[in-house]
Length: 115
Length: 114
View 1 (cartoon, helix red, strand yellow):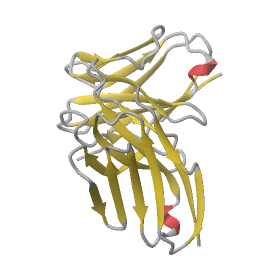
View 2 (tube, one colour):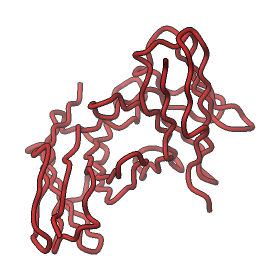
View 3 (cartoon, helix red, strand yellow):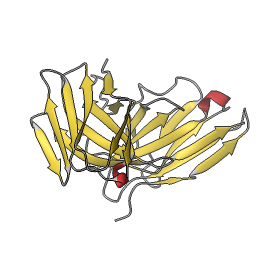
């Protein structure tokens, strides 16, 4: 059974800093790994999707890496801004044998960027 | 192209009543997923559907919960005889083909059982 863990659970940094959010997963047989952002009381916004054959994806100030062999992914945020404050979720897509393509989520990292 | 739509956004039910949650996927998407987010918990996969078919319901409680995605109309998550422990945010996501592609999430329905 896939388990996804995110560290740290919460992070507070001053504006402008570069930061790294960590995600680990137990089953390396993943289809892909996605990073999402969730604002309080809102839905999820997809940030980046890394296919199992890829090593990283970039979008603007965000860069996500994937190392299947070690079961790890990182989300790098450059030059953080107060608007980046949110909960960041990591999710792995695994074929369960029963046909499930549902995502397995970590509990998230609650990020606060101090102005 | 409108995003994934869910309604209602907020739903209040008394114990024993039925809750019906609706999800309209993005245009052109034929795959729908339902997730539940309990207070202070992560999102948990419940069920994966394609048009008129349940592909995987391994995350769905065996009793009181059911889901459908008819040929016409939205996907429905139905909870019968709700209990307080059903209070949660229920999210729907859709993708064009499979979750090898990005899943796009709706805003969620927040269910409160009194």
